[in-house]
Length: 177
Image (tube, rainbow, N blue to C red; front, top):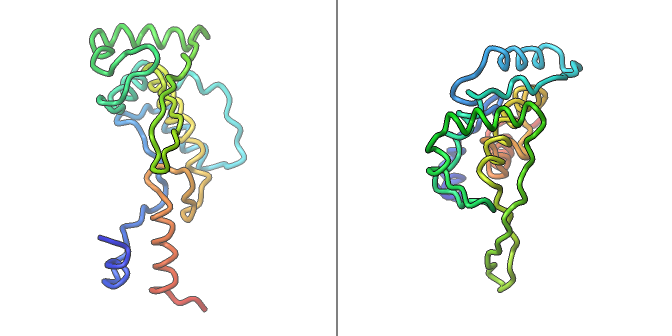
């Protein structure tokens, strides 16, 4: 529904409620305990989180990626990586945990803008995307607990459109004073 139609109809866009933590399909008990500890004590400092990056979490990160995404500098596609997936993930897991994993450079490509200029775009290698998503899930378990319900910037499932809708609902449908 367009913004003007929604405004006339009085129907706000559905607002995400509470936490916007986007979790993997299979959440480990350890990661759930990390989230609970972050919820209980916001001043708690977390150390040694790498053990939460498991082969299972890497597998879920692989499955969550877009199979049609452009390959990175290594040329590896989602489907190619899926052949021998378990062995590749065990190798990736081993490299990450022993400190031997090194991110590859991003593939640089340019897309045309409406004004004729080119916008640079960096495309990460597939293994880099897998590791990045797994680490994001571990860190989100901690940091999403600190955000307030009205925080919208750079959060999964929330956008500037959701923020504008919340302001519209607050102004039009709620008592201000």
